[in-house]
Amino acid sequence: MKEQLIYSTKCWIKTSFQEATIHIKASKIYQIYTGKKEKATIPFINCNDAIVMPGIIDAHVHINEPGRTHWEGFETATKAAAKGGVTSLIEMPLNSNPVTTNAKAFQIKKEATKEKLHVNCGFYGGVIPNNEKDIEKLIQEGVFGIKGFLTHSGIDEFPNITKADLEKIAPILAKYDLPLLLHCELSDSNVPKVENPKSYKEYLTSRPDCWEVNAIKLALEVQKKYDIKVHIVHLATAKGFEIINKQKETTDKLTVETCPHYLYFNAEEIPEASPIYKCAPPIREKSNRDKLWKGLLNNEFNFLGSDHSPAPPEIKKIKEGNYFEAWGGIAGLQFTLPVIWTAGLEYGLTLAQMIPLLTEKPAKFLGLETSKGKLKVGFDADICVWNPSESFKVTTEIIEHKHKATPYINRQLKGKIMHTFVNGNHVVENGRLNILKGGKLLVKTNF
Ligand SMILES: [Zn+2]
Image 1 (cartoon, rainbow, N blue to C red):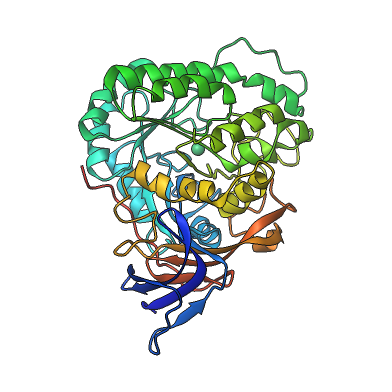
Image 2: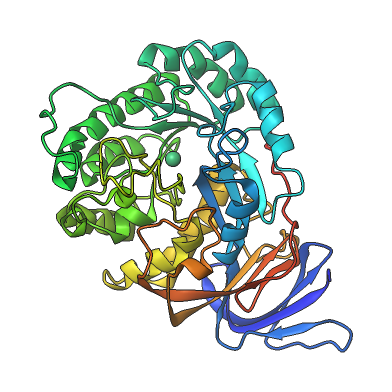
């Protein structure tokens, strides 16, 4: 079914809601009609007053295939994405094996997606010590950016890098105007010895705010010196805003994201022995969360990404409850929109603030702004339809991630996804998976 009419009184067009009918044809948005328009020969969906908006673009996802497909794979992750209204995602270079640090590994990863993509999927490449010779080829093969860690990544095949390593690849990134994505934590030994590994407070203390701030300072130095695009992934400390905002006054090449779990949870409510909540940087105190929201509402984040990073229960140390031995990563790809919407209601978040952070803004960051991220004639027919006032409970039955272990389990969330269209395919219909394998590989080409 390649032709479709979608009507709602609330279609997000440009910067406001309008009553319109979106006409999809041959995987693109063919026309947008004002008001209700039905045609005898074309299937028509009446969404009444549900929100019709561009599909979510999640620029921060770990899928782990090939090599650690038992953690998460393209098949399950892209189903979860579709059910969450995500129509395009960009996959991180680590947690799979091989890690995506050279063109050959990138080829292997692309091959691993065959017949498994239910939403569109692109990739980042990775920088590790001594792979500077591989970076240019990775870029030419179509990665959307190069990701590096300033502290141990948790994956031995993906060691962290130093400023000297970044300086080796900065000229290559400058040549292609491609972003360097940095996990900003700079570890030091000034942290107390662990006494109780089941204590969340001890885990939080072991990765202090200053690790983030010190790493951000290094990232800003490199950005300034080489005038390259630098993107700070998953900012968890509000203490980072001041220096980031200051540098943003002088450049538009610095960007920053945060993730749903930092906006929804806070350290005070995380129980002992529950590493299901473990991620790095850690979820910090409520006072910090309040400041992250203040920054978000003040337009200080460039976009939001899930940082979906699941692992099997035995690697998450669910039984043992050991925060220090557990894998650090939160599974939540399917719930980005309702989590942010639910948490945001408490802070006065409006739809007009939220929608661009999930659609148009990540599209711009990725250089996809001429084909994705807007309901606009000629754009790809990637569309999400959802009801902001309907609630649902997260249960194992509805989760499409490979592992059902997520800190959102049993939470009541507001904002229910009704339909997802990917390249014009009606992938999710009334909340159920319908047409599969309609996703495409996204390759960065326009440099
Ligand atoms: Zn990540």
